[in-house]
Length: 319
Length: 121
Image (spheres, rainbow over the protein chains, first blue to last red):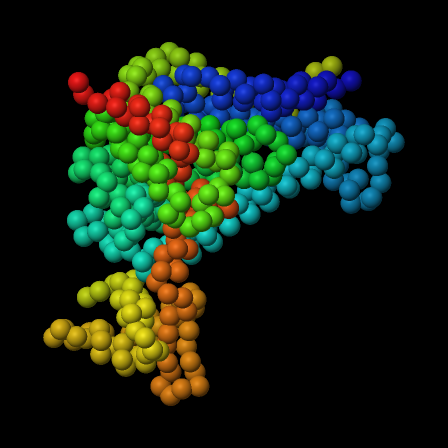
């Protein structure tokens, strides 16, 4: 009797529900955003691995004692179209589920990537026609619009940081430095790749609220990481002030923008407001960074999360 | 020597500002203004066909020489761009990373209070 699938199923359940909820509620990630980001990635990967592993391990039971064994002896059955005598309906159901789920996740990741690239290409073309390069700052462009915005348009080869005329009017030189340093950090640390993986996860599981919570949490952590880079160039207070100023100004002027802004979902608004709030709190309350010992502990937990399902999938069944 | 991207932008600016459709020759003459030699006609034609492929410029092939005009106004393109930036497009966050996202008026009030709290005393 193979019980690896039970262990994998329990792990999959834990990683799909209680663990992400606890992590999303925890306060320590604000003190170690990079470490927390690693843990989120480990949870998502290990969750998918144990989910598919549980289905495979259960479904392949009639084919072999381990998953690797089972997959190997599955091939001749697939080619001949027959089934081993011990195979029952539920096992074949789980097996099909594992294959469909894997294909679904991979296809969604590819689709999310292709869609984002296409939108970015169009956006980059618009930016290059509508904005002027900033002579003293390579890789940056200025759009002539009164809304105070700054953003990073990530690219596979080169990224562009775009500032608006409204932003330059709103902020002083030091605050602008904070914004630019923050946006450049997104580009150099390639944050869009991590975010895309979590966005693909949410797109594949639209009925699964945890995927949305994970995306919100990861988005905030990425902003905090970029803030931490900016803190090396400017004071915490300057950065906090820039965030509050830009957030306040963009909140006030929303009716003046395209009317559909008002239709932006309340959830998205709440998440953005919450994110700005958390970023300012951690800059003003001066809570110390998480100790090295705690960071090492968190990273080890993340590592263990990946090792356990891998071992359960590869190891011979324990009976 | 302007880059191809900058030349695209100058040509779009001319087409946006023009009341009528322009020929490649008109554009080259306008670009050459101010004593500078300006780009070669073939370069202008290359840039125009790039802009046509991207959907920014339409070409009237019935006329000789061909006439070019902007497909949409500058303001329409700016609206499209800001639509994506300000977060009203369906999946704007997938495209770009904004410094601070859209916040509600309640959040503005609370951010204001925090801002005042952070002021040096």
